[in-house]
View (tube, each protein chain N blue to C red):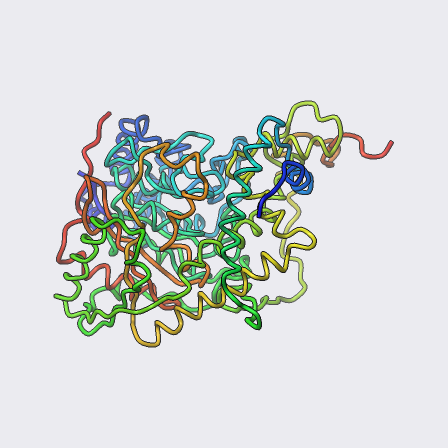
Length: 95
Length: 483
């Protein structure tokens, strides 16, 4: 599998990840090499094999629907780059 | 002279020294040797001494737990309340964790002392520790070589006697490979044995925490405190934790150990193979029965692993958005710019590569070809092990194909770096426990032997490693350090 620089720009957009223009070629080549490695998976016929998501084949443990967390907004917002009146502040989204 | 965890607990119990004294000794060694080795991202001197004083009070009252007063180091991806938890990333350089990981909570309840937070590959992505925002760790045996990764700081700190024990995490070999490269003992438990709560996630279906120490006996002590059910981790096992220290004196007489032919094939350094064969001979002398086995899908584990790990990491790392915590770029023009530049400037190159591959593998039209295919191969790899364990008690092989390589030797080629993980990553895919212990040297650098156990048989691994360490002294060797 070989990617083009345009593919990398598109994937980077999906991942909301800025890549410098002068680094795109290097990423394109690195990612193509990694995908060639990954393509070795196709050497094996795995049709009919049940996918394994949890190594122990465990299923989600359920619990009663009770409140177990306390409100720690003020503590957590001390970590935020920009807050105002209990909200996280970001650049204007709606004109 | 570096002490073991066991020796420290005995000395504290007998009143030969106080926790404050032993903590001061380690802090002094860190001050002396860490500048050259770079094992620690943060040293928590004041906190350590305060915890040591509390531990001494607890010891004096006769209320000590198993590790009360023992100084330890923690990988900088375990959240530590009030202490910076950086994951060796610029994006978390300013992140003061607001709570403790369950592992940290267990050590605190037991009265252990925290010396500091250790260096690692950024977000645990790497096999050499060269991907840290805070610079590479030097291997204490030869400072021109890498310590391994991603838990390189923890492994190097134990090897250099800057801590008697340390925590790590292992997603594809990140405890076992640095343990091998640094000549210490480390165990990756069964998936779900140790809580992942507060352990910053890389690949959630593979990540597992575990200890490093100078011996299997010490690892048994540390793991007993780390392990256990936690309702806050939805995949944490409810199985009872055995008394590991009490279960390591059983010997290996009659134990069936399988050697996978695929682990001794092309790609393995011949001098390293000879060291492993000598170690196998020791176990045979102790009464173990050695036989060849086959794990035919071993070669598939690398591509399978990298799809699963990168897909899960791209999802997990989407939480770092420059909004709620962590790094935010300067003067974002709009919200998209804020996301893209905060992440682009906050993450290093390897993390970005993995997010991109994972995003691609999970994107519309590619999911079946990559992630679903990888999950199918994952089952085939797991079934290889299940078949093998029908005939043997333990599996044994090298931890790595070669000894620690030189800093910079593989940084230009991500794929050649990934191939270093050939013997370790299949265990994470299968969820099995494994450990690495030192069994000799090649060119002055330590060789690690890997033992693989069946599900939840950490006690069996620790017992076999302990039996070997009773008749050999590789685990007692220490590097000569320069200031």
